[in-house]
Image (cartoon, rainbow, N blue to C red; front, side, top):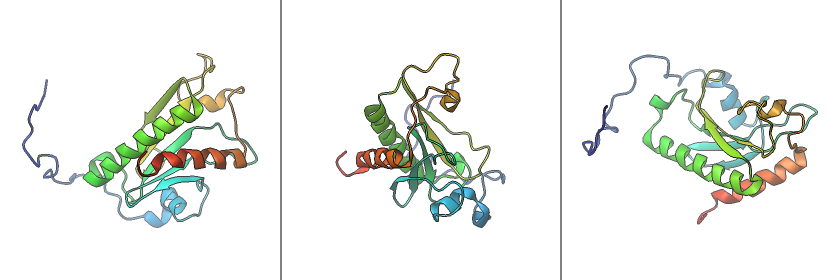
Length: 176
């Protein structure tokens, strides 16, 4: 068991950057789908809920010619970085704050059975954290992370999704 009850001041901040290359992805942002999304282009463009100097929070875009299951949000770093070890402390804190805020608003707005969060990073090498709900009534046969496969899941059209995103964004206003 490794427990640091009182870690030395500056221990985390003074750690060197990772020496290996799997997290170093400062190059290639012109081809990154999430960077393109932040510029307002590409297939991932979706309703923007919140943004600051460190994070961009968006709802998953609706499928082409379809309706979205509400409550699937991405918290992404503004800076192109692929993994947790390469985040700056301000980025990590901004991500934590955004995930906390969006989870509370999703819980309040949608009253789901659960609010989940996951970091996978396997498909797009730009840090993004998934925050998503499992609606009440989802059968146990529906995987915890695949509510889309449930035909009876609640779904929103683009206008309804835009209204939901506006309500979620209120949870990021000062004093919330």
